[in-house]
Image (cartoon, rainbow, N blue to C red):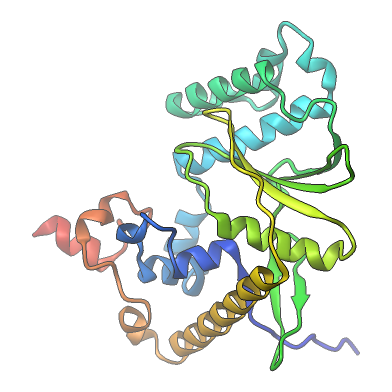
Length: 276
């Protein structure tokens, strides 16, 4: 007889940012988008939307895969046609022109400045591995699962564990994401000094190295625990009362933002604004 494991709430940086957006991004915040994405994700219309990457998402995924392919065969970084060969592996010719152009530029940037070359890489993800294995975080009352998809980990020359996250687009780095990575590292590698950073593949810019004190890690742990339980409570509310969706996950009152949302074709608030 197979015993089912007890359900516990989950948290991630992505969920944290959907609850509390980064400074300067508050005007984009919409709880209803989180509701579509997480509470109603199995509904056919919404599942169909979620199954397709936006152009921005596609660029990010292909950029990550490109870095991965360069380091699967390091000779590509010395080959005059290295960028062309990686583009062929990624089948860029089958992508939309805007995606193809941006990713080609990113590949060319990385070919010129391969920041991981000669690094002692411990792990480099391709970016399409699916959900990572969660880490169970114990708290004073009940645990939660922490999900953190780490792009790359390598060792610096002094033995420091360096957690690296690749970015594309505008160079906006959210230090909270670094703290989430360092929280996970504190459990997985408790005796290892660790830092985190971001690298923008479009602009070739590094962030400052992020370090965290035990107090800072405790703060981020408490915040993740709080949102995990609050989100789980809202999911349960919705399952008991589907008609209360808009009250449980209220929309952004500024409907001018809706035109940029991937759910605007099915959201009654967005449709109402367009037809007005």
